[in-house]
Structure formats: C-alpha cells, structure tokens
Image 1 (cartoon, rainbow, N blue to C red):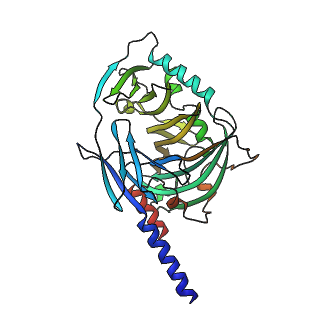
Image 2: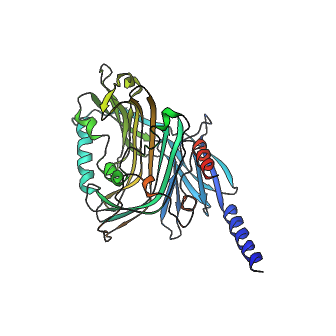
Image 3: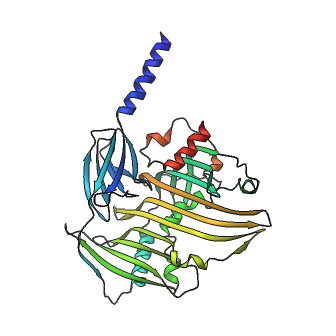
Length: 385
C-alpha cells in the first residue's frame, strides 16, 4: 500500500510539474530569426515583478507561470498568456522615429565617466543578492567542465565587494582521451566567482576603454513610436590601430539618466592584432573576450540583473600543448534584499566547480533559470547518464 501511495505521489508531482511548465522560443516577427537574451518578466508568488532571460538560442523555460511580458530594447514589448506547453513568440522590431547623433559640449567619453562615477556612489551595500550562476569550460571545442549553483552575494561596500555563500551546487566533468588536451583538463573557469558582482558594479570592461585614446564614443538619441527615449553610446575602436581593441555599446535610460545595459567584446576588425604573451611556463593569445551586463535602477540605487563574462584563449606549452580553451560565466540575479546582516566568512575558493556537487533539490529546474543551449544540455546529460 505504501509503495502504491509513493508511486501515486511521485506520478502526480511529475505530471503536475509537466502540466505547469512552458518552454518557449522568441523570434523576430519579420526575419523569423531567434532573439537571444530577451527579458521575460512575470510576477512571483508575492506579487513582485521578477523574471529571467532567454538563452543564446532565444529559448526560455518557466514553471507554474501563466502570464509574462516579453521585452527587448530593439523590439516592441509583448504580453503573453500561455495556453500550450511549447510556444513560439514573435516580437515586432521597433520603428524609431528618431535616431540621431547627439551634438553636445559633453563628449561621449566624459558622459560615460560621469555616469560611472555616479553609479559607483549609488551602488548597493549591506545588500543580499540571491543569484544563480554557472560556469562552462571547453578545450579544443569539447566541453570538459560544467558547474552551476544557487549563491548569495552579501555586498558590504558600494563598490560591490561581497561575501559569497554557495547554498547548492553541482559540478561535472569529462576526461578527454586526447593526450594533448588532457594536459589542460584540470583547468577551471578563468575568473574568480567571488568577485563577479564587484566586476559588474565597477563597470568592468568600460572604464579601461574610457581611459584609452584608442576609442571614440558616439552618443545617439533614440525615440520609438510610443515616445520611449534612451541614449545609445557606441564604442568605436581606432580603425588604424595595431592594438587589440574592443567594440560595444552602453544604453542609458533618459528618465533616470542611468546605465541599464552595456556590452563590450573584442572587435572583429582588430582580432588579427592579438599576439602571444608569456605566462608562467606557457604562452597564450587572446582570441575572443566579451563582457555583458544588465542593471535596473530602483529605490535610488543600482541593482544588478545579469552579468556575463566569456573568453577564448590559445595556449602553447612546449611542443605538445597547442590548445584552445574557452570559458563562459553567467550570473542571473533572482532576488535582492537591502539592510541585511552580513556574514563574517564566506566561500573561499575561486570557482563554482571547486564547491563540488552538493544539493538537496534540482535547483536548476525550480527557479525559472534560462536554459542551456542544446549542445550544452547534451554534454550535461551525457555525463549524468
């Protein structure tokens, strides 16, 4: 009798979960192409607005959510009520009635300087950010390590310096058979997970560009048909430079005059300028690098929404190792609370992977986390099986 009862409960729970789950993909209504990193906003159990984003393939997955608002800076916002378990959502590109270069006494460079200076003053402190983070490592285009976790960042200073607690985590890896690649198989994500919030609030990736004379910063004013205005600051590398330069953009909300999004990445036109550099017993060359960040400005303070950092390196060690290593780190903020008590000590390792596998529930399925890409999910499933 007990076995039958347990089976019924498990079956009911699984069926209920399936019936209340929705998988979706967001596409451009005109081109039918996928739209990556779209905002998916909904209300939580307390009635507060929260949300997630689509992955690089434009996909999202939600549990027990029936109504959402889909938004993107370049598309018309759309409200959707789910009636099916799998949906395709088409967004209409915005028509800008104004998109002009701003001529001002304040240059784009000085404009960004002032915004970042203000942002650092207004960065949150004594604040708890409940987050989901994940790290992915590839060697020679083969997935080698994957780790993710539910983490709490306790911000103790306005510059984003935090005490990190990892609540639940999982870590998986594969052993490469190729003798060359296996030399680097122990390599983890190249950045320190304890500092990601600090990187975001320091606007890592923009300040160094502002200090360099190799860039110009063009300011554009954009206004759509609904009257929404924002500034788009385009980061332009010197086309004649033989240095390894970046390109990107900064989006500024006109009402609050605050940065809501930025992205910088190695400029395609300058990747040819990357050169081998010495590091310990090896040499490396940077092939690609990108930093992308989203904020919202509420209660007179900046709140981090999403942070992404990725890179690709060529590593040379003697005659045997000529490998390409790439890592990606994503951090999605699930909740934020102010005026919290800060823990004295926190996680001391550098990567999520080092926390190992330690969870009591399948947290990656329970928090409406943006899904993995198909290739990434296949790797995770192959190791799990």
